[in-house]
Length: 252
Length: 133
Image (cartoon, rainbow over the protein chains, first blue to last red):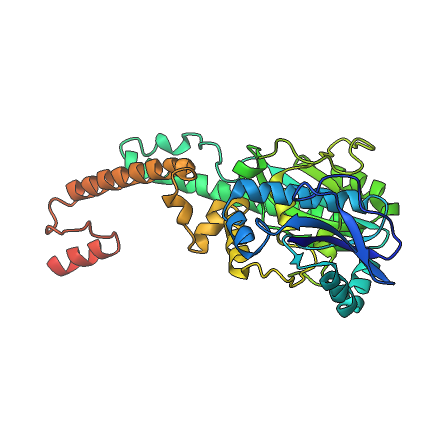
């Protein structure tokens, strides 16, 4: 007994599945109707049934493996054709159930493919130095309040806080400027929450984490313009990504 | 979490100055887990699990301050995640100590005024003197 994992939806005749390993080490393949097809993989029923997936969702190591494999197959497929990426952990009993689903939601998939045709997704992040931890204030107030260490301390704290608010305001302005520059070269945008420094692996603070749908003809312009728009802040452009963030009609 | 991973298509093809190809797990999770077309398959993955996972990932992905604002703090009880919080505890300890010292100073200043459990505020102190005088 086996199950069928779905990676992405494409147009019928768009091409074979990529020659690589899927989420269960399987070789992905294509099933389809006259108009639409899905890139799928045959996976074991233990491990990918309700109980197996529920257990996997509790295991960050297994999640990482599934996420990377799923993304890898979708990305490889997207290299030479238009695809509508499907969310992680979409599993059917058999191929017939997949083709039935393709027929049932035909219009929606068509619209998704039209939306991303000839376009790819590019991530843009902006990092700035320490808005969270401003440098210690010079001891300006110490002379006049030398006999009041508590007051001097509180004045210093307030100065630190004011400078922190100013830095945050500046950071927001930089982030919005980069986002605006990127949006001018893009078709659509989605925003993610900024990543914590422990995930980004940087000491600087992330102040923008957005992703843009860009026409292929404008990709060079997008990357060059966005990369230069930081004005001192670090701008990181990632991609191209398969259009995961734009497969659904609106931001979820 | 950034080690290993799958090369992105087009890697190295063109490389403007600031461009960094990313196989950062957080970047992939944001897209693969939270985006993409949603299809209800035959295998019903408990949506609560997906949502819970998204929340867990979000906590790692979102800033810790933001999560705390939302009233989510389970990581503070998770020893593997809470090491970064020690600074805050230390900061709180120092602040409490400083407040104690300030209150002691204030009490010393007011040692001629009627004794109070808490230091009188500046606004109330003159009124007190007026009514006393």
